[in-house]
Amino acid sequence: MADTIEALAGTPIPTILVVAGIVFLILSVAGRLSGHLTIPESRKRQALFTGLVLLAVGVFLNLPQNAPVTQPSPAPSTPAPVVAEQEPTAAPQQTTTAPAPASSEPEVALARPSPLPGVTDIVWDDYDWKDLKQEYQALWAKLGYTAAKWDGGIEPSSYKKDFGELSAAEQEAVWKLGYTPEAWDEEK
Image (tube, rainbow, N blue to C red; front, top):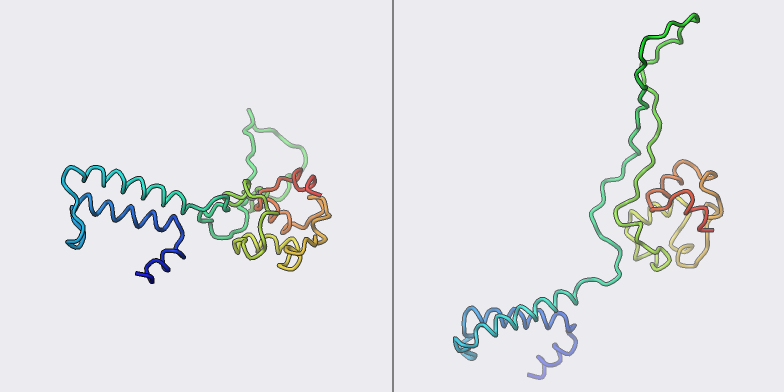
């Protein structure tokens, strides 16, 4: 009995509530537990209600509070090219100069990368490097951060640059981390 009490003393309350809820649910359905504990028919409904409440509270308390969103993220990829569309004209226009040689490739402009899911709600200063998901660490590494710099509050040279001064890879990382050019420039 002392071993059981010691084991329960080290068990988190939410886990105890979930287990107790399951026991009450079993009692409400089966009516007895190992032949030692029997619930009268008139009390089965109360056992069911108590089991559901304990289970719900235990599950709720086990949910992470203020944790970063852990939605599955898409595989890393390069930004999709956007093909520039030409507006139709009313009538074909005649030109007097020789037309430019036709290119087999359409004009391509790179689209702005979308932020990773959930990053717009993250306050980055609230996390140690080890607590960041690997994909976030990789993006911050593109901006010059390492675990030592992040945890030590040391800003890499990219942090002092305006968005327009960043390389294309750094700009992509900034976008994916949820910053707009204006927000990045204000961050300093």
